[in-house]
Image (cartoon, rainbow, N blue to C red; front, side, top):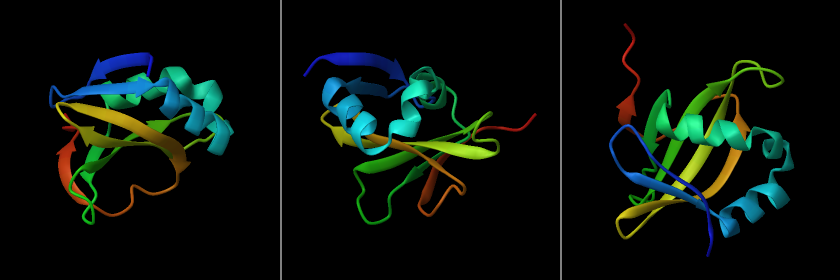
Length: 108
């Protein structure tokens, strides 16, 4: 498993996109391919982080994106693997969805 990138989320947790995760995203959600650089931004500076209520080890990290998916969220789904969060998929979504709030950007 080779790392495509590793960054920290606002809670200081290490988040890794490896080649398996990127292959899945490229195959199942090709619309995200041109936005690989946005994945880093969304993880490091999201609008909201939600915990999956059904699986306590899974989180959605969401950030707003601009063109061509104006007013859409880029949802980055991660799973806890030891001390690391591993990106398992990413896709565009019109709504934040359900889940327990873990973190939200402070509006100033």
